[in-house]
Image (cartoon, rainbow, N blue to C red; front, side):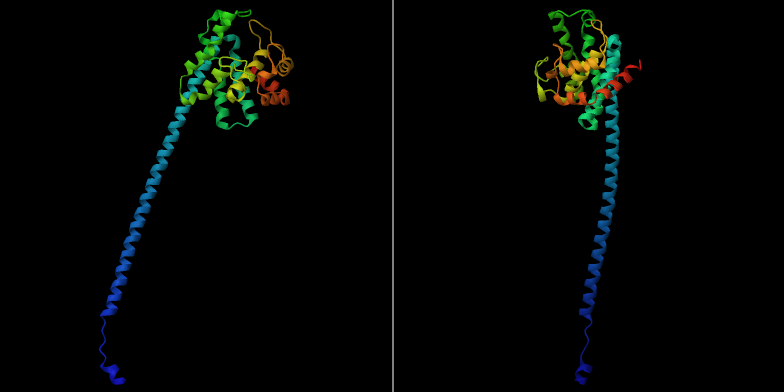
Length: 265
């Protein structure tokens, strides 16, 4: 056995081959790791670029939104200056409508748009002849038909921009009534956009409380009574029952809010 071990020749090549294979695998691993690291850095750079682009897009969207709101404010000023007897009416309608929208639990973005666009509900009246708009007595049937066209005029003034959808809904449908007896389309119930249902109620409440060429202002309690019980012309069936419930349960808060805005004149 000793003689066999002494005479046995050692062959180093299999070991060298194994070491070379390990080194090749290690080198391949290092190269792959470097490629992965480079790809990761590239992904981070792309992520940063996407984040910057997204932020710029948000800034641009904010600028566009502010442009629309600025345009809405300018239209509100036009409406206010055109009809001095109802000028403060548009501010009260805007803020009271937003208050009702909050009570209904609408999403904040919609509430903000209702606040901004409710003052435009009667913007079409700038195209109604002054002698009809400010007539101190009751309108004739023919004059009333002309007056009703202000909702169509408003729709045309506001155009077809998607951003003004809520504004158009308010302007076009705030004279619709929950029981289907309103104009121009005779919509009823849930067919009427919620923003228009809100403004319809607020518009009537404010009109009852305000002095006009053809009527004296009513007290808060009298206005609430007429809306909840009716007076022949105005009926509770005209309004969304949920809004009537809010009106009934928050009467004092509505009175305080209305008077706070009205006293700013």
